[in-house]
Image 1: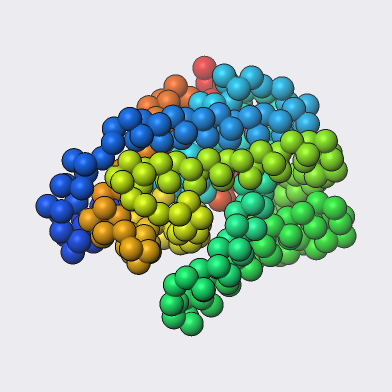
Image 2: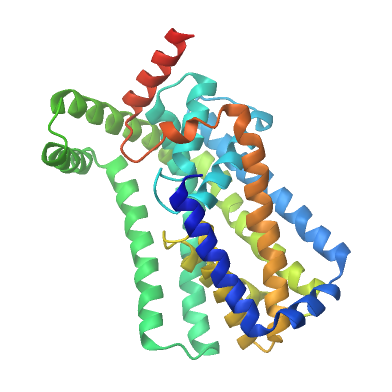
Length: 354
């Protein structure tokens, strides 16, 4: 991790500590002692199953693109991708490019092809989230007294996610729109990247064209969507079930629908790319809203700490333990400014040196 990420982590944890201090750290510790260990272990088991469901969905998409890789090989890639997502709020580009790079290395395919399956996987994860977020925002206006500005922010966030999702899909099914996006990106390149711009423009043409072809193949496969869309909803159900089990372990008598609604709102806040993995922000939203449902603030805080240990910290630690197997240097290769051609060339240089 670079210095900026470490500082952001430190700031995020400081926010969490301050919130726990306001709740009463001694009360939180007392609440932690009352937790049912067996139910917490069950929540951990649900999280592990979720990892496999994530991997299964990505495998289905890879198979549709004729990139056949076993779950045994894909699972570590997924874990590394999730961990990198958690430690990089922005910067190098998150876990998706890392996953795409690891698949590209495994299958020796084009980087844009592997990246397309990752983007499709992310889009499928976003689709049920958008549906659940729209329902949640509507339902929570009846249960909670939101300020107008907060409602506006949440609605705008959902609209922005929908717009990006529609834009990606439309770019893949409409060649003319794809060319316009191509031209827009090249316009930016010419403005900020003067050196060897013609060579760089050719790379952009190739990347977008390959990305469109692969995404078009994935989107047009109705049988694939028949499996992956229900699977995506199932993944979100398991995510909510994990949170519900953690609160159940603390004896909290709360409706699973309310648990799900607050979790969706917290996830929406966590998408703001300011803090690594939404540390501090997600925790704060969960403590605040679950306390507002009538759960004692000490129980809300304790349950949130355990829930984040399972969903965030366990995932991050496992992924970072696996990362050295692939070589920690992959984080230096992947950035928003790296094209697939540049990545492939750097790999070629490394292999020639060996």
